[in-house]
Amino acid sequence: MAVKQFLFFAANDALPVRLIKDAAKLGTGLDNMQIVQMYELIYYLYKTDRYDKKALRMLYKYQYYLTPGDKKTNPEWGSFIQQMDMCYHEML
Image 1: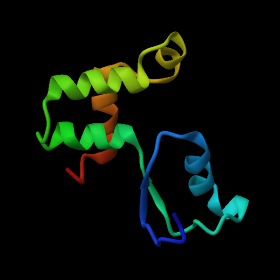
Image 2: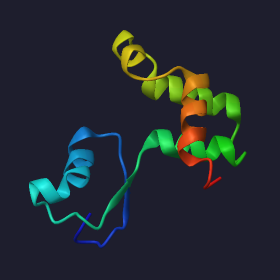
Image 3: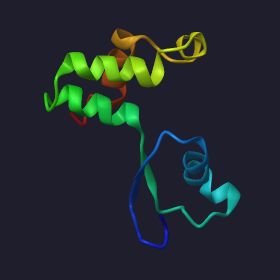
Image 4: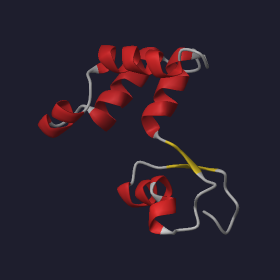
């Protein structure tokens, strides 16, 4: 990632996410990188009407709301959209 000078990295893998999010604390040298997480991409495509909304809802459920553990940690689709709207209302 850093060698190729990527500014953004998309992943749902905990290790690279942690290496980038905690770059300063861990001294990874990845301080200038940002992560585009899958849920942000799903939300962007949903809000910009760039993909079928039903398919995006199913993808969200598959990625973040499939298991009982996921359901304890992540919001259901409607709440997810509302929370993301609050976070990104000025951008979109």
